[in-house]
Amino acid sequence: MPLVAAAPLPLDITLVEPVTSGGRLVGAALVAIAAIVLLITVAKLHPFLALVIGAITVGVGAGQPLIATSATPEGTVPVLTSFATGFGSTAAGVGVLIALGAMFAKLLADTGGADQIVDTIVGLATPRTLPWAMALVGAVIGLPMFFEIGLVLLMPVIYLVARRSGQSLITIGIPTLAGLSAMHGLVPPHPGPLTAIGNLGADLGTTLILGVIVAVPTIVVAGPLFGTLAGRWVVVPAPERFDAADREGSRPAFGTTMLTVLLPVVLMMGKAVVDIAVDDDTAPLRQTFDVLGTPVVALLLATLLGMLLLGRGAGMSVREVSASIESSLPGIAGIILIVAAGGAFKQVLVDTGIGTLLADWAAGAGISVLLLAWVLAVLIRLATGSATVATITASALMLGLVADLPTAEVSLVVLAVGAGSVFLSHVNDAGFWLVKEYFGLDIGQTFKTWSLMETVLSVSGLVFVLLLGLVV
Image 1: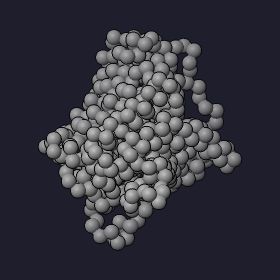
Image 2: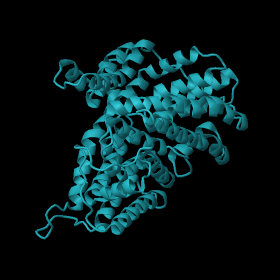
Image 3: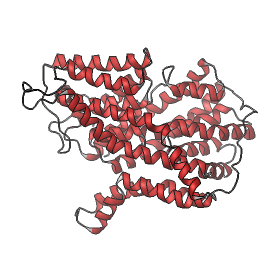
């Protein structure tokens, strides 16, 4: 049966009653979202500034005071107080995870560990199974890395594999992009899924397990299967001028690299499994996994282990390893600010009571929560071009609709939002132009390959989320 909104909220989610009429609340939210969209797409304003303005707009539009005064009614939360609360809690939670993930990803690239994974997996494939191998490469590399980093890292490999196999660059590249994009949209510790998990109070370990379950068949459909078709109607040879240059020096072993990549995944999944199997939260086994499986601890351990094993395997000095870690942080400062501002926007929405309003409306209408979450994310994605902004905004609007849903079903709402957030990348998405230039495509070819692949991935993800919702 489709999931529909229920009544009371879980204990870890707090919503307030609407501060004004439903019409004014909805109008304020629509104006704020429209402002975010226009500022990003028309005014070309940075998403961080757009989200800050949007947060203030929705609060003021709902009639909330900007600051507290002696005349402020008891229980009313001023807009700037809501903003500070949401910004701080998101930066303290998700921001730390993004920073640790970026450190680990940079270390994986600089030590040659990512190259080792690629070479090993591709080396075991036949020409017929190469698209499947490249989808696996994209998924493995995409697990710890941001989409853009993974794309830049893998493009020389895509060129080389396409030339050696004699296959179209699209046939080889689309499966790789599908693996990267699915992980970016569906699987933590990427910023979008992490933010949605935080917004909706979902369990990270459960979401991670269900995300991988959804991601695998989604990648198969949008990757090797769709890539084979796309490679027939868009035939593009790999540029001769790009070669996958071997990294000077040694590389860490494949087993060592995979150990570090999969460690946080195993720890977080282990926590989810032990929490289900062991009811007593004071049992030593459960307490151990509750600590080790905490996202910050899991990623911290993976980063420290990577510094030791990957750095040693690559023959890097302590100074070189430290320099690699340090160089990872400037590039993700903007991402952390965007995500934190999204958390502030979410908190202002919560404190106006619009979440309660939407929950009551959805419960009365009997609308599927999963479908509604996907549609909201799709609309915001189409308007802003940002998967992260779509995830942040859609999950904020869905907060009141996960009332009284079991843990697994809340995780499915997170995945529905994630699937919608990657729908139809087009000209307002930086990824569109990145793929266009790297693959040497014109705009029409980019729509027929990359944009259509993202659409297939998004719809397939929704279908598998809905199917999974029938059994969890």
